[in-house]
Length: 434
Image (cartoon, rainbow, N blue to C red; front, side):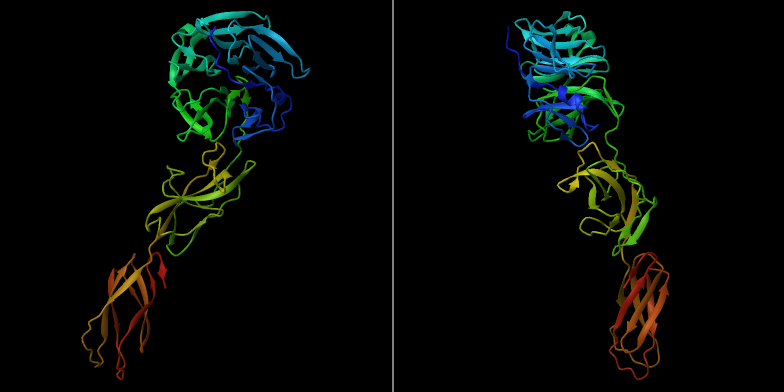
């Protein structure tokens, strides 16, 4: 017999009997120190369930754990604390799962290769289902998805795959998807929020281990809990859990475009109708692209009020504000957490302030009672209302329908100059510049 690739799988039974938090019990981790319940919404471990180890573990339909000790499969009774021999397998193993009918499946290895066995826990009858083709190594984990049997396995001693076992026949097994992020030693499935979900361990680009979900239609891996040490995963196949994340970001009174001048704040009115999961907070984000969050986030605020930032923004551009209900990591929104909600986006825009530049003829002016004319060139959105002061003469207000106009005033007969014209206020259709 060849060596079995060992995985330390710790019994899960104490947790099943003493759950105190409804979001715990969906998934179980064997990690440093033993087995722990795991909250997939907050990516946190619950209190340790048991430090006892075994080669493999699965959860029975009655929530009792099965554990593999050498060639023998035992059931641990949660009420009595007594272990009962259920059956034995020919090749030991380190993969185990229970299907929706209560049948136990175990993968082991011997000189013939990697083989699959099943045990009927009622009769204790063990059935040898055959060997896998090629050089598959049972270093992964069995799981059920869509009522069919799958396993994560090594092939060619280095490449790991999600392998489908059609009709529970290992001779017909084939590679479904490569496990591109490494890992795959721990895999489990259950129904979360009405969706059958497969969870698997893996590694990110920096070599850090974490918990992923797998899209079984595309083979896409999605990291939901980074920096999480995992040795093995376990869950009751077919178990259905209600939504563990209740975050709702709420809504704004406004839903159409809001505008302001670049020297003003834009403030929305939140209706205070948010619902926050434990450990989550309400935040507001200003983004440049509502379809590219969080990469497009320009600012985050505890209140729905934002100022124009010339370092990251331009006037006349439409931005968006949304409410976010989510957990925080080091004071920042944890965008990688599955428990967050983004409300609808309200468009906002800052307008440039109007400006005026004066043009005057610098030739000497003879005060003979004639009016003095100075050209005003405007930037902004007409019409404009300009208030200006002429030194020694007074203050004037004039309106202009276009992008330029003429300031006319007549100095008094005894005025000797010089003449200094200074704009004190300019109003266009959008903003006032003082």
